[in-house]
Length: 217
Ligand code: HEC
Ligand code: HEC
Ligand code: HEC
Ligand code: HEC
Ligand code: HEC
Image (cartoon, rainbow, N blue to C red; front, side, top):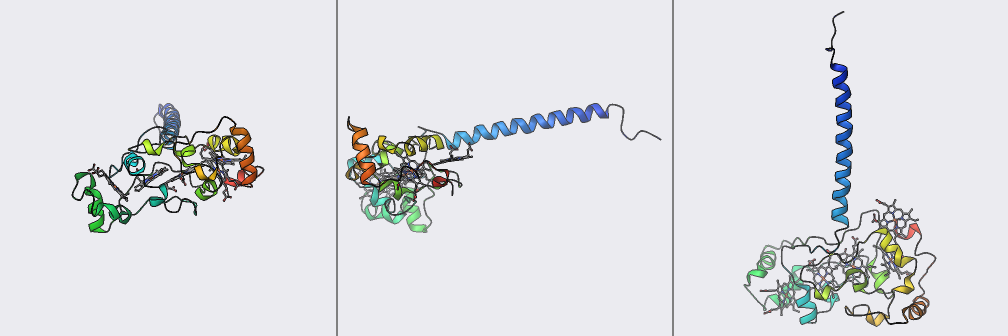
């Protein structure tokens, strides 16, 4: 019977398998590295379709976070404002400014501005803003000095280990409820004493906090 495969076919098949396995391995490594750069990019300012300066609006104009992030105290999501919120002022202020062109376009077309997300947990993680904000966890503990940023960056890694650092010992971080929106808050020297009192006052369930089912449900 004539040979169907040439004599060197075995060698070829062997190298094809090794090459294929190497390729898949390298691809997996590349994907993991890529995923980490998106998920854990701490301190990298994120560019936006409108160069919206938080520092100017928050620190100089004194606008409260809740003016734009309206649901932060009542819902899981903090929500990013609609163009209408910008237009309450920018229908009169800086009309025609090049920096506001994309806002004007969105207003006339009715299409929302496509803001790029800075923070984005994987879908299998449950997070809830109101649970934190109503239990003495300040915006700046997780987001840093937003009042000093033009473009926003992630101030903390938002990894499971980072979440657990607080969920295992919330008394190290909680503050009086009057200070939650204070960007410049610094913890007092007796934080652990104050923190323990606040944890009791807020009825924070310290047994539940580190359990898997709190964040993975
Ligand atoms: C006048 C409206 C306005 C005010 C006031 C405002 N923000 Fe924002 N915020 C925005 C807009 C628009 C975006 C989306 C663009 C961006 O990320 O820069 C945003 C984005 C953010 C993000 C990033 C969201 C993401 O994609 O992960 C955080 C965090 C944030 N704001 C926190 C705050 C805090 C804290 C305050 C109060 C100190 C505040 N903001 C005040 C309009 C506002
Ligand atoms: C409460 C009023 C108010 C709201 C609401 C508001 N702004 Fe402003 N914004 C101002 C004022 C005042 C200035 C500064 C104008 C100046 O310096 O002449 C400004 C400046 C700006 C600038 C810089 C303009 C330039 O020419 O450099 C941008 C960009 C901007 N705002 C975007 C936005 C966006 C986007 C929103 C909605 C998410 C928004 N603003 C909401 C009042 C507001
Ligand atoms: C315990 C940490 C923590 C605190 C406190 C916190 N945030 Fe966030 N914030 C996050 C995380 C985590 C995300 C990403 C959520 C996701 O991807 O589902 C986020 C996302 C956001 C977003 C994007 C929209 C959204 O809900 O995904 C905005 C806007 C925001 N935060 C504003 C605020 C403001 C304003 C405060 C204070 C009133 C605040 N945050 C307090 C951790 C926190
Ligand atoms: C600085 C402290 C702190 C950090 C950081 C923090 N948490 Fe929390 N978390 C709390 C406190 C305090 C509560 C309120 C507990 C209670 O209601 O008894 C809470 C509650 C929760 C709840 C329960 C909400 C509910 O409705 O039952 C979830 C889910 C949660 N956190 C997820 C996260 C995730 C995910 C992260 C990281 C991305 C995170 N937290 C980071 C302090 C923190
Ligand atoms: C306070 C909130 C919180 C608690 C409690 C928590 N996780 Fe997570 N978990 C997260 C967050 C946020 C991520 C995604 C970010 C990351 O990969 O670090 C995550 C990611 C994971 C992943 C994916 C890991 C990876 O590297 O891709 C697994 C598996 C996991 N958690 C299992 C658990 C188990 C098991 C428990 C209980 C022992 C637990 N988690 C408790 C917040 C939490």
